Length: 459
Image (cartoon, rainbow, N blue to C red; front, top):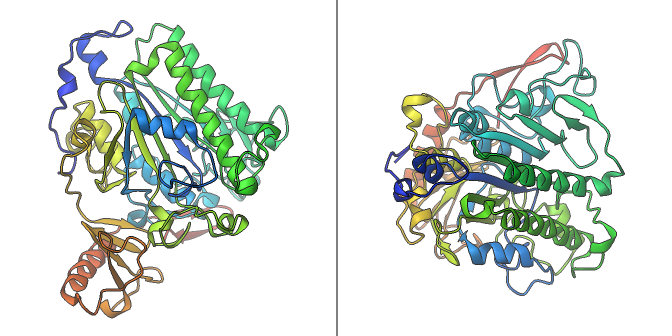
C-alpha cells in the first residue's frame, strides 16, 4: 500500500477556484499544517473531556472535520518528529534525534522534503514558527557562530518564505536566511508569528490564486518556557501550562476564522497535530491535569504518551464533518497522502524518497474505511495492528526477545500489562521485524565541523 495510486474521487470535481482549471482546482487544495510543540494527547477537551483547560477552537475544528484517535508523531522529541513530517522518513531509519541539529541540517541536501514536493506541484510554500532542524555550520565554528546569512534551513529545503525561530520562542529569530530581532520580548513573539500567518492567508486570498498555498505553521506552545500573554492568565485550571494551551487554541481560532472570512476555507485542507506528547516536566507543573490522558509515558518515551498525539484534519465538503477514525497513522504518512491526493506516483517521480510514508487518503474520504498500515517504528517501539513492542534497546543493541515488552493496545491502552510471557510467538515475530528494520537502517555520517570530526547519527 506504500505510495498507493488509487485516485481520490474528488479529483473528478468540476468546480473552478481562483482561475485554476477544474481539475487543478479540485486536486490542489491549499494545505495548512498547524504543528503544536509538546502538546499531549490529553491537553485538549475533545480528547480528554472534563479537563479544566478550555480549547473551544480545537473542539470546533474537530466538529467540522475528522479526528484521529491513533495518530503518532514520527518521534517522541522535536527534531526527529519535524524531520519525519517533512521527509516522510522515520528518523530512526537515518538516526535523526534532538541533538543532530547542533551539527548542521538534520535534512540532507539529497532528501526531498514535503515543501519541495509541493513546490514541484505548483504550490507557494511558506513556513512560520519553530524550525529546529539545524543550519549549516561554518568551517571551524559551532552552532553559536553561524554567519549572518544562514543556509541549510527552510529556504534551502523547499520553502519560499520563512519567519520564525531556530528552536524555542526565545532562540535565534530568523527571516528568510537572515537573523532578526523580535519586535518585543519573547512573550510577544507568538503573537507576531500568528499575525504573520494571518497576513499570509489574507494576501493569498487577495491575490490571483493561480498557485495553491502550502503553509507550515509550527507553534511554540506549550513548550517551555510557558509565557502566556496577560489576557490568557488564569484562563485554565492548569497554571501557566494550561494558560499557554488556551493561548495556542486562540491562535488556531484566528487561523480558521481568517480562512472563513477570506473564503479560502472551502478549498483548504487544515491539519492540526503535535510533534510529540507532553513532557514530564510540564506534567509535573500542574498536578491533577492528565496531559497525556490515560496514556503511559511522556515526551522522549517509547510509550504511547511519548508519541500518540492529537490529529484533526478538516476540508469542507471533502472530509466528512464530526467524524472519528481509529486508523493507525504516522506523521510521516502526510507525504504519501498528499502525493496520492495530487495523483503523483512518488516511486516514479521521487525514487527513494518518503520511505516510511503510507497514504491514508481513503480514510479522509471515508473515516470508517479499513486502513492496514505496515509496521511502524517510533523511537524504541514497534507497532503492528493492535500489538506494541517496546525495546529499550540502548542504541539498537537488544539481542534477546526476552528484553522487550509486549502490549495489546486494543485491550490495554495505558500499557499496564506486559504480555510477553503469554504471547511469546507474537513477541518473537514483532521482534524479528523490528530488528530487520534496524539492520536496514541507513545511518549517515554527518560532518561535525565545529569539532573537526565525524559523528554518526544514531538513535
